[in-house]
Image 1 (tube, rainbow, N blue to C red):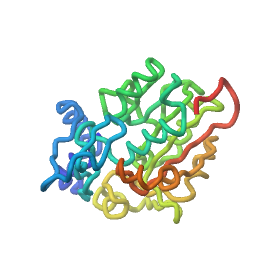
Image 2 (cartoon, rainbow, N blue to C red):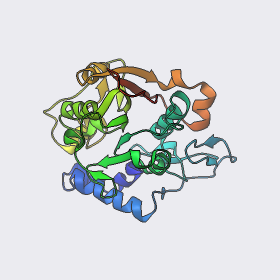
Image 3 (cartoon, one colour):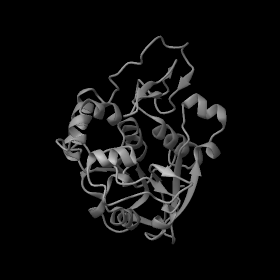
Length: 276
């Protein structure tokens, strides 16, 4: 969703702790529903020749993408479907490195992004379940620290930029592992620094402090190279994959992929064959 742009409109109230996280996200979801999930900010200045960048999710080709985020990063958001770098990385990884796009599965998607949710639902039908804390449009509105699903319910779990929003993330990680079947797999994306341990500080307890420390008023940490160990506590064997190793330079340029990481996790054990 286009939360980065929308949050800028009332960031002052968030930082002043006058607007709670729930109020902020519910407002963003309402605005997104009203505009059908499409970005509503045009790029500044003349656009370069058409076709310099491309969105692999919706197929849009453009001279450049829209600016996005609290820092107004240039050339980031697809003007058609609203995707940003991490969405395009996840899409290309699933399409090129797994059989997610070709084999129906039971999929849990946390805080599903509007640019991908409909397409994933078409692929996996009734097996696809989207969960979110604040969106009434999700299949299940719930806290992922207490998921209302039986153990081993899902073949695949997708969780992108969710765990950093949770003050105590270990119960959430355990739940993701619990509902994944033995032999199943998950893709986890978070703000990630491969060169340092996770940075978190419980004494930073205001939106203003978290914005300064973690780059976002509703984040509680920047994950580091100890994240695979945290995931292993939930039975998830994680491999860290860097964008620069997954995609060549031309692919990164064409689809505007930033220097990012994802973790491909496998749950130990065997059940029915995994789909990735």
